[in-house]
Image 1 (spheres, rainbow, N blue to C red):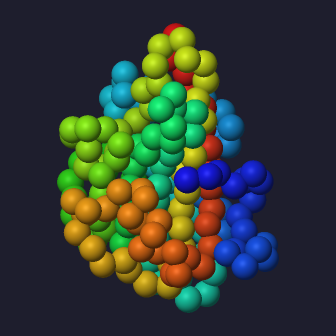
Image 2: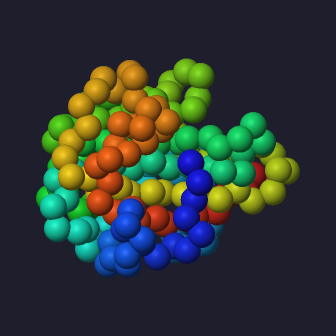
Length: 176
């Protein structure tokens, strides 16, 4: 998944929107704290968003590392977040169907095992800083498919004609 070059949100038509995402855990372009990394507590960070366009009925989140040595590595695939939800708490459980937010589903990340839900930054040692993009998609409705089939790629394909807007934030993490 290619990251947008400008962290400001854009509608799929290219028009600007007020849709934005932030995390109280890290500022845009700053270091992600170790507790959200694979070598720390490996907890999902809190995310907050607002300004979604009219007609938003659901949200999806994809977290990606485009600096991974083997190509883009996906750390989190989350979809069917209800349209009235504007935040995710820290530390969501690694379950396919979440109780909070009700009805949200987590797909498979890029790990070969233990791959449902969030897996934090864990770049190879001494590979330099990696960028981690948290993309939140405002959708015109929920995406219906099995979490076991939901990867970043299959989710992107399924929601291709349903994205009203995308907001992104990005944090940095480096293993020494």
